Length: 329
Image (tube, rainbow, N blue to C red; front, top):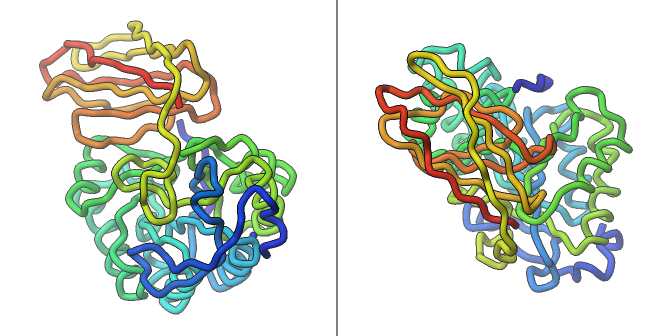
């Protein structure tokens, strides 16, 4: 199902990434694929594909990824994993990481908490039954999230993953446009793509070549930070450097909630951390890719829309603004 906006073999990798055969990560013991040696990579990016596994596209997608030395995170729908368990195993055997993208791809924030729980739980089971292990990452359909959904995610030990770059392949983007989107990725960032568009599969060799030319390699997404790291989950991703400043300013205000605007200066590649006073909660964000290490902490990164973003805070009786810090990556 397409996303609406709310809110690749070896020869292509070139000299930038020397190749070696390695086994899959700890979650996928026994999977073998061709990938770049960590020592040759100056950084890692997270390639993600939503809405699989599907009989009409997944085998071709996996072949393209393997033939071009790439690994990726597959955000599977539970209904497809249950219907195609052999394809879940094929994803693992190809060296991919398998994650949760709900069971039926609903608008999760319009569901009751029990229905949210069912969507996530049934997908965890379907993926495990197909040999995909127990997912540790969850991507909400359409990128729609709220505090209730994040509480359900925490129950299942899932880290919510959105994206830094949207390929727009769900919106009939051309192969050229998808390649260009991947060209905007920087170290640690995540790109949204999908299992089913033919243009996406066609773009994979050029995505591999473009990453290699910039010394970037495909990595896993850390369940701790939500950032792309080395395929073994190690800390070989270069650490953040530089500095930036995040400034809060008031937006609209109501009796039970208020808006904040955040403006970042000093860097175009930043990570802003906001710590909210309990029991206040963020109930909406815009123009940023946000993750939630804890219920009271929000980590915001660029989503390609510039250096200003916003959030709505439900006060729950505490109108103290969150503290804010900024680091440049």
